[in-house]
Amino acid sequence: MAKLEILCLPRDEAALRQKSLPVTSITPDIKALMGDLLETLRTSERPGVGLAAPQIGKNVRMIVLESEGWKNDKEELVGVIPLKILLNPEVIKVSEEKDERFEGCLSVPAYNGYVTRPKKIKVTALDENGNEILIKASGFLARVLQHEIDHLDGILFIDHIKNKKKLLNALEETNGHEAE
Image (cartoon, rainbow, N blue to C red; front, top):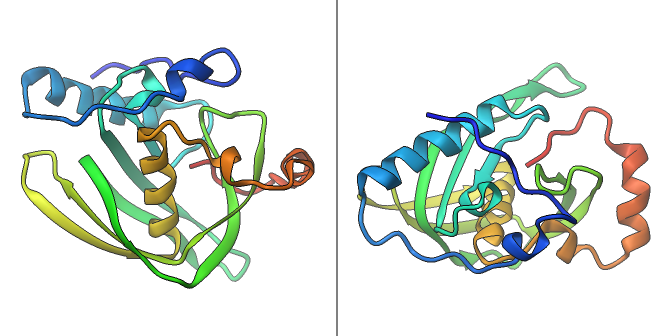
């Protein structure tokens, strides 16, 4: 496993905006990329809960998610996501009910903001062994999955923010929030 550089705006916009190619088989290179992606997420200078392969310059449909969580203002542990390595993830169903929450991104380090997304989703994917899985997610996990899957299609969280002034103002509101 190796820690790789995380691509960032504005320097790496062209690479971050590419649509990623599907993983067609689990080769030794794909296994190595899984480890590199996880190592990069875990050792990033900024805290994060997910990372997509395009963020480290690899144009394949792979994401990793992991969060030990944090305590909210009521001292409750929230935001826990057990390790997930997903290949070719695809959102197949979304709820009509939406939620606006705070997001950040390791590839957009200068900004954070509020993004509206469906509250509940269903995702199909392959796990790290190539087995098909279905994930029914709500709340924080649903948001993180959508954020990371967007990366595979060249979409960044800032694309979802209609009022760019809100995005810029969010710089002052980032205390205590995790990047995704």
